Length: 136
Image (cartoon, rainbow, N blue to C red; front, side, top):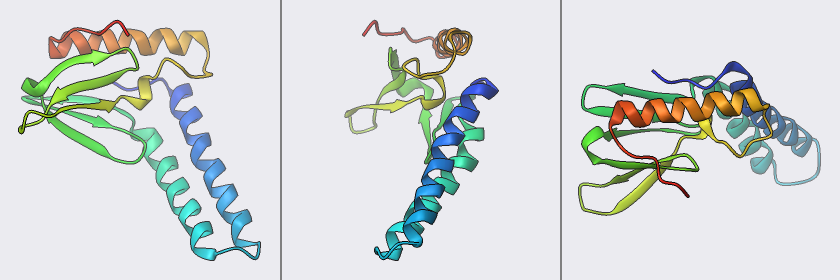
């Protein structure tokens, strides 16, 4: 199981808190209420899911948990990891796809120690999946 540091997960949680605050403020205005409810719901989902961010490799599958959903991919379909980072894989139909590993993003305002940790985790995931990391 590969998880981002707590500081990175808290950073992602703040995005959800911001969405909830915007939603509540929206509900207090004379604007469409459905939009305010949508912000609150999406924000709540992000708050909860930010603590579940990570990559889990189980047998012949890898599960990448992001801010809004998780994707289960057969390890044999994973071809590489992009520098973003994202799992690059090929679907059963032959389509090339990618799934971002949001918890390990390197272009983030988080501290350097967290960024170094994230890079180390991406290298460990690459080793565990036996796939290269693209230099993009």
